[in-house]
Length: 243
Image (cartoon, rainbow, N blue to C red; front, side):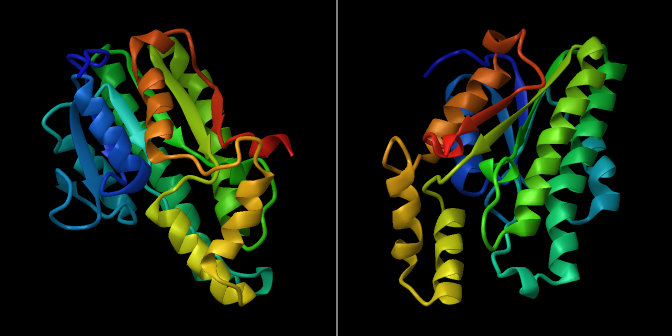
């Protein structure tokens, strides 16, 4: 138990599992009041489907108070070959990964500015937004948009005392990664573990990362220890992006 976030309130989307759950748990252990959000009923503090874009501002207004920390962790990934990418899936990927994150960021930032309060916004991107990957064109494009959006927001919100940064994880051992492995297994006709093995072996660190390791970077960006850090993208991928 620590106090690096004592007295702060954080809103974490996608908090039911994986990286979102790890961030929520770590933030709580460091003294923050954490409100987890997920579309799965009964798992987190708030149940909300981020695809309901028109309801996002009302959702923020209904919170007990305006959180100083926002972690946009919710996201979807659809894995399929280039010629099987359908418009509906492409647009839904951007709706959840980009538009919903932007609207949450904009709404919370607006309230913080009105209250003359400082804040930290952390957007979960992916190293897929920095490098090409097979079978995930729209996911990679959406995460590249998250990176660009984070940098531009940092430029706009910096004078308002609100910092904005992004984290770009690589192969992290989460339910999402296992689901991707299963989808690639069906596409390629090989066992799920064989879709991951060559990627992991190519990493300088020779292993998948953990959600807890990504959460540690989020903790740094949420805390006052990063008070002079904004507009940055922290790549947490075991060195994969170096290839």
